[in-house]
Image 1 (cartoon, rainbow, N blue to C red):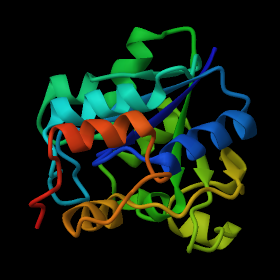
Image 2: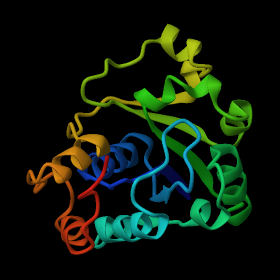
Image 3: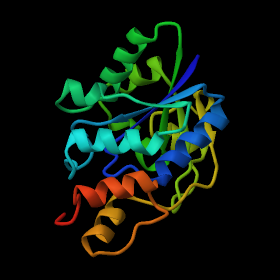
Image 4: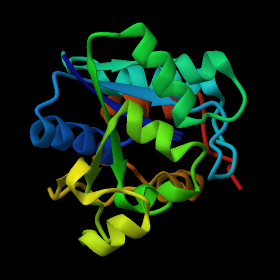
Length: 199
């Protein structure tokens, strides 16, 4: 089985994440995508919403998508969420399956600065999904990021221009986010008053 791994803070999870997962499934012929909310992202500030809320929002977002699953492996492990550690644990859990790491180019361009990037490449093939507002990488840019172009699946598909930071700002300002996150996620945010006082 081909399993895609889509990690992130999911703070909050939004339609861009879902579109990236669907695009990667199509481009790489994946059977399943695991959404993995991070405990403590190494390259970003700490998440605003707590880990349990972000896991629950992700579960709500993928409800009804048979090929999507949520794993709380990083939240349960705690500490910095290093992809190499997560992939090693997933390989042990799914020994007969092939892992594919789904990244936007904004994250992939920092790949060489990651913890144990060679381990990541050994454990999973990288699928790069194009992000709105960023150009698609060429061979030289991939090589500069520490990625062999022949080992990467480039998935150049249009995805919605949504970001977690913009959503948090909109919620704080009282602007609607309808259509940018799944309806169940919007209800969860409203019910639990998430991001209302986000600085």
